[in-house]
Length: 107
Image (cartoon, rainbow, N blue to C red; front, side):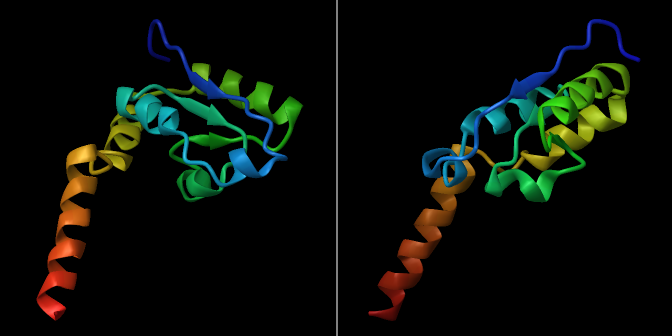
């Protein structure tokens, strides 16, 4: 266990469309710190289950926070940071720029 471990938590109520189809940037921010992250199911982040912890109910959420605080490691911190390493605004701007350039070339 690492000293002074804390976890990023997003216990959102996910039974509404705004949350279900949103893309909370806070998840990426938490992952970028390397700290453990526990969230309720959000479509965009389901693929990262294992890098972060996706809870499936109240008791599961509490259990996953406990696990996050007690089972962290330097390797897990590195994996969390690597998962979002390319998810920067610069990377997104480059993707958009390339898409626009490809459209312009077609014309």
